[in-house]
Image (cartoon, rainbow, N blue to C red; front, side, top):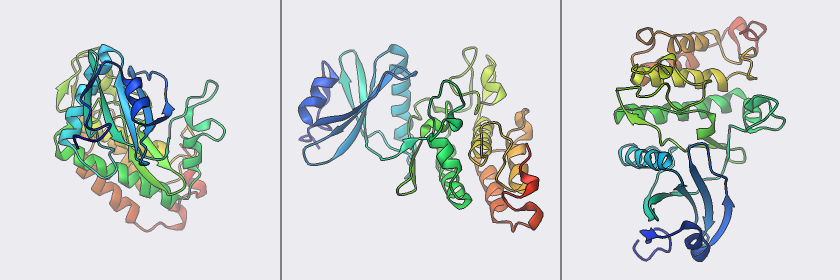
Length: 287
């Protein structure tokens, strides 16, 4: 695609003039906590692309890590990085645009899911079948992550794009995923404390696939609850038991890997629910 106006470009002194020249910039976000800035650009033929630029040295290291991750891991719901270009002393990556909203919304006076009209609150209000189907896609993507020898780092609801019109889900911003196992080299890893395992906060601790199991267990716990306080569980006791094992503070007591966790989770989802174990039953509105 050497003649493609965007994918055929390999080096520019600055990104914004290129994007304005090749098409319409219809979205431009602020610099994220990671040190990256993202743009949405529409080409004259209607193609839409997302361009993510590193604006700090730390962001460049993360972007390089993400580029390697996307070369090793492919899954239909993981939005791929398909092109990289040099921008001055740093770089930017190009991804196909995907419709949807991030399930994480900042709110100064409330948790992300409690913001009135927030995406996470809206997602949690969906029928359980929709929530479970979306969660299963997240888990299935992490089977591919495990197969490639990677572990999840900095995964949280902000990495989940959900299109409420079509009920499609995609995963983005997985740049901190790394080959495992590895040892924590700082006082903590990047990430949201709502999803992070205890070992991610300990310098020198080993991060391996059981850490990913913890993160996925927390993902299931938070997506299947009706609120951030985790007092309105919508699932079954059997599903809750799988999550309890996955999120044990002691890594050896968790599932041995993503596949074992997913198999046990799917078995729990297939299990018939008795009246006392039905979703939204009185006994389930407990932490």
